[in-house]
Image: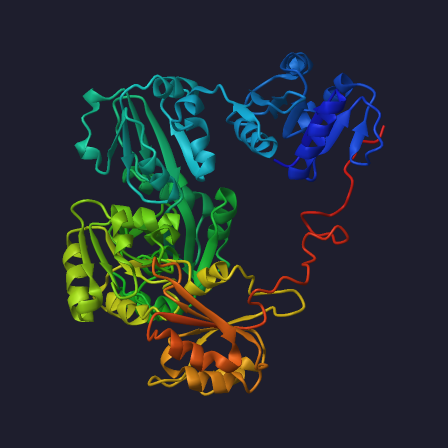
Amino acid sequence: MKKIAIIAVTEKGLEKALIIQQEFPKSLVVTTLSSSNKNVSTIASISSYLNDNFSKLDGICFVTALGICVRLIASHIEDKNTDPAVISVDDLGVNVQSVLSGHKGGANDFALKVATVLGAKPIISTSSDVQNIWPLDTLGSQFSWQVETSLSMNKTMALFVNNKPTALLLDIKDKGTQHLEKTIPDFVTVFYNEADIDYALFELCIVVSYKVYEIRIPSLYFIPKVLSVGSGCSKQLDAALFENNLKEELESRNIRFSAIKNFGSIDIKGNQQAYLDFSTNNAIPFSTFTSEEIDTITVPNPSEMVQSKIGVDGVSESTAMLLSGNKSVLIEKQKIHLVNGEKFTFSIAVDVNVERKTAIAIIGAGPGDEELITVKGKHYLEAADCVLYAGSLIPEEMTNWCKSGAVVRNSAMMTLEEQVSLMQEHYKKGNAIVRLQCGDPSLYGAIQEQMTIFDELGMDYFIVPGISSFSAAAASLRSEFTIPEVVQSIVLTRGEGKTPMPPKESIAAFAATNATMCIFLSVGIAKKVEAQLLEHFDADTPVAVMYRISWKDEEIYQGKLENLAKIVKDSKKTRTVLIIVGHAIGARKNRSQLYSPDVKHIFRTNKKFVVTE
């Protein structure tokens, strides 16, 4: 929402309007009152202002009585698809009412945002919001899905808000479908296979799919762009014939043309006019690949003829697979002969990221406190059928998030081979698997060797980042590790013990920068680390020796760098220790310019947005 007017008619209302404007810095505060505030636009008539600007605005916030708001906008209301979002705030900021274009125009969200700014009560009357069920008319735009419905959207929504039995069919998995699965109303039943639906039991069917189904009851389709089309062709290709025949081929296979995400071919076809026209006319991105890139793909249907002519085993299947990231295709290579004698091939693959299949979730558990796992990580952990965690590095309390019946194993006593064998067993069953790593998996997590094995076995996986212990250390020390004009860099490293360090990554080399040093896995060589740090840091530089940060038995020892080895020795801690070194520890001086009134930036330009009359 870019163009916003905040209209006030009283002095108290004007005060609230200026508070709201701070949250929407490019908005206009409009009033008929005189004001010396340079952010206020004083106009002769609000009615005249709305006559000229109502249809041009994205949102209007009236800081007035609701009746004034309604009378002023009544003659301008036309259609919910084009009317701006209108909300009304009383001049004491007690209530914020969504008035017009709640869903389509965003007035409901606008009202909620303003209510948060003022600490007010939001008043939303839209049925789906009151019931806390899906707003079907905006789900498509929210998740970038195309929308098709067998009835009008109003009739479809009437069935839904009246809680008629609804079937939800999900063919793909993306952010939108995950939202639907987590927020299913009690009158909705979810299915993952259309054959399982008994339509006699339902009055509405909602489908998220790239497929076409013959549904005998009112239906609402959300169509995600998830298909990659690869194509090869003869030297000449008529654009209209190509597009029409491709659409016919997809329709005959019950595949939606509107689900196409991207389109590609080999680079020698980069100037093929039919392909360029197809891309432009349908707003489908067109990409090409070199023969070297295509040769990295093993295609289902290699062609000796194509190999002899252009040096690759095939174009359509390989480019579809490259575009989608998928190792298989939905539609294998099809050869199409056109009425004018020209020909083309095509193949279709589904975006690998939306396929409904098992993948191992490598999740950062955070520094130790079970509540410091990310929300996303917690969701995966709660849904997992099999969980592996290193009990020596992750507290057992973290497994309290696991569901009843899940297989939960401490990997500390298992070999890597035993771990992989257990995960393979569950992977073959299609079970949800979590490999829980301490801190953030990218830091000293030993996940590379696991991912190498997963790649070799063809097991899909993904990574959910976690909060590292160095971030938790800053919180425990109540410190910011980057202080203006003192230190602006953080070094995450370890000392050289049994495992050698790369030659340019010594502790001393990093210490030369005087950056905040976060030293992992080095408590056993504290004396050596101290000596290397003292080559560049002052002896009285603050240090913190931190044991099991954020665990229930966390211990913190602080002092000066010259005493680091003694602090470690006296602590009697030999593992799970992080050493922090630097002048940022406990620093309280030096102000950032981010919030300085003398400094402007893209969110605070100091520009005045006013109406001139």
